[in-house]
Image (tube, rainbow, N blue to C red; front, side, top):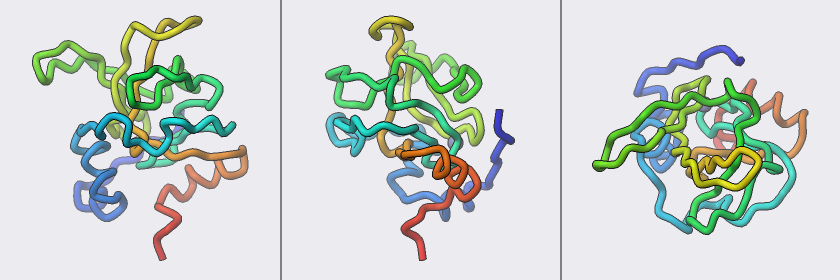
Length: 148
Ligand SMILES: [Zn+2]
């Protein structure tokens, strides 16, 4: 399990776009059908947009029809942490990045085999990485590549 990444609120605001901050640190949810990874079938790995922690493999991604990218399983059980969330009068299980504690989405028990789980994720909380070399890069330098 990668080393924990702990930053102050100001550091997170600096590192993330306002939209990323709203989801990852503010526990927001992007609007359904707006996420950039919705139809993505590219092979590779989805890493945390906040810290580069590898979270899901493209092979575990499936079309859930919900409007958010969905996965049956994280790359490893310790890639994410899960906690019960009672907000909005619902009992849901929140999924967070195990490295930076960023909010990723929720997990539901209505997914396809083999796990029967549906990890319902926010695209904006994820970044797609194609190969192993870029994966090592993502975790070493999690800052946005489009910054000067
Ligand atoms: Zn993270």
